[in-house]
Image (cartoon, rainbow, N blue to C red; front, side):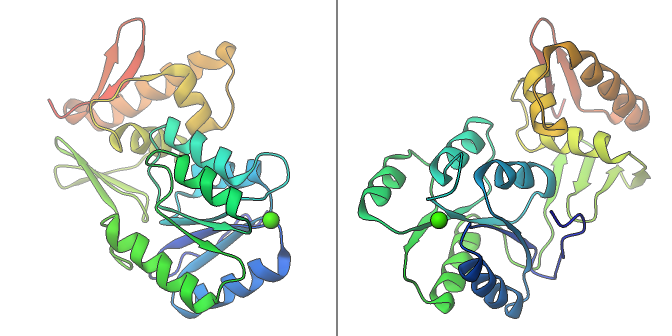
Length: 232
Ligand code: CA
């Protein structure tokens, strides 16, 4: 795993593909178009990379070792993660599975495909999802704004310094305003594991984020359930 993926002007595209030659070719064309590229070669590391790196789009092979592409997408959607997904598929029966995924796939290409076509599809998927390439994702809930790519948070116009984990936690909540997340869901999304014994970690970090954001803090405790980010 590359610990420092490139983040180019148009944003980072995650390519999950176990065929090295295809991954290299796709990466080459995406970079040429100004995207940053991170490659993962199996479903589990692909899933972890989406959570960790927050790419602008995922090029997701269906046939992957272990957890396959459809399962990766299903897991993301179940977590309310709507990162645009462009599936790459080799077989007709895979297409059926992709189309059976309600609201799961943003588009797909079938192998063999031309890399030029794939890049065009990535751009289409980004346009459709409202993410303009090269423009930064900014989340706003109440007085708090999070500049996702620059990893900066402001309350009104004042800069607030959060640790990396605090930032990821806040952004995860702010991406779905009003939605209540359990501690387990937050653990799994932000820390990358689900351990009920560790849910106290979530409380500690929420308390730290609240203290740093002050009166503008958008995180609400939902008794017996978890946390949500609200405007009021
Ligand atoms: Ca494959």
